[in-house]
Amino acid sequence: MLNRRAVDPMSETSDVLVLIEEGKEPVYITRPTELNGKDLNDLLVAKGILHKQADSDQLKEPIGAFLKDATIEVDAFYFIDKGPFLMMFDIETKTKDNSGNEVGVVAGLTGDSELEQLFMVTSASARVLCCTKGSFETLQRYAAELSAQKSAAQVHGMP
Image (cartoon, rainbow, N blue to C red):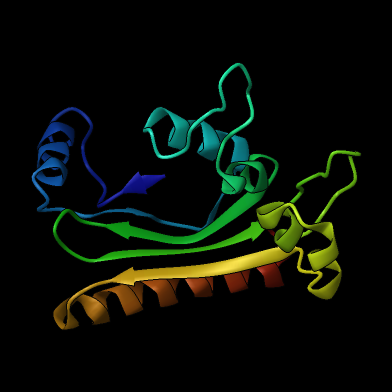
């Protein structure tokens, strides 16, 4: 799913991986994909970004409860070390309250079901961009290509 260019696995793969490690080649997805929120939570815990409560599988941070049952649709991911970064994603929450009822984004993040009554939001989108003026056109073309692929797939009834 992640690639930079087609490579001959027997000869060029290790060279491309070294270039990626050195920050000379980008890593990016070639089509939109879906992530499981629990898998993302597990990765964030393993990297020390999120933290489990003592003697529990519950996370200290509210975002952990929000993400654990979510589906994350990643529309774009482009990264090169010390260079541009782009990530575009949509989150469909399936967070549940203590009674097992599904709640929206606001209650999932804040734990406040009364506040949720004011803002019934069931999904969220985010775009993260960090680039120089010189790399903006490259990221713009990349995002436009992925968006066109996604639109074409939806027209033809494909996921």
